[in-house]
Length: 148
Image 1 (cartoon, one colour):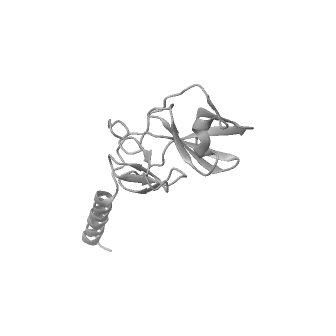
Image 2 (tube, helix red, strand yellow):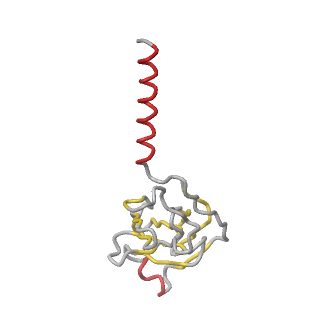
Image 3 (tube, one colour):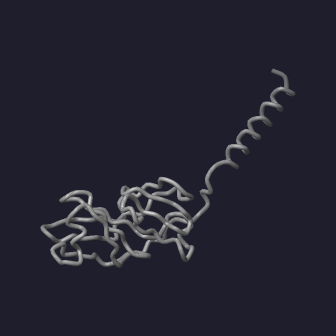
């Protein structure tokens, strides 16, 4: 291969890389800020948490913009930060449970998340921040420890 062909091959690779990068998602947004909090303990026998006794979801105070609790089964719960993972500094970047109850959504950027916290559409490319939960009897403890 002569030098002219090597130069053309290098330029072709550069153009291809540039084209691929211009089509990718915007990965430059900031991560969700971490805000430690004291453990939150919820007595699931209290009437205000009845939705969590069946497979359900509920918003509670805590974290950066609040926490969405999701009951996986009788012994397992997930706690997600309500601060959207796409441009979390935006004032409206708050995740809520969709009216259907089938997924979580951020109406501000149009991102949707499953109940594992994974993005399933919209601008978000990062999962939601998930906090550690522990169930002891009827007490559900949520800590600011991040689940990876």
